[in-house]
Image (cartoon, rainbow, N blue to C red; front, side, top):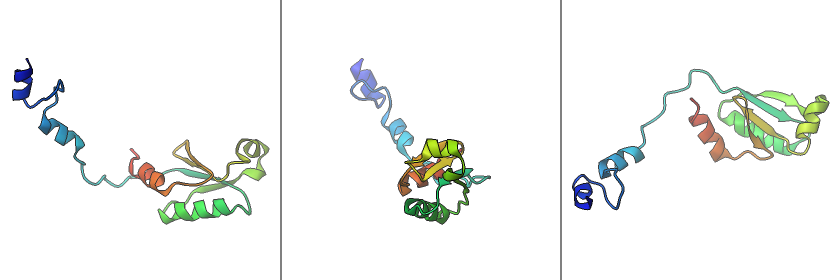
Length: 112
């Protein structure tokens, strides 16, 4: 059985051939541009330097988020008081506090 697997390109119990493995790990090339921009909601507050930095970063990627002041709504203040800025992308909260640029880039690239 082992000899039969080896002849077909598999090794050590892995039924996948080398070519199949290579094809699975190759990149498929650049993605098509998305037809619609991401829906981004930016929860912020006045005088927040982290919010200013996060907004500048998001805008560098051509995104114009909907900005929401958490202090204008008691429910939002209770929910996000200690963790602004909060960034929601396409309905999911993705960042609280600082924004990781590498993760932001990956999220924007991976949009369906």
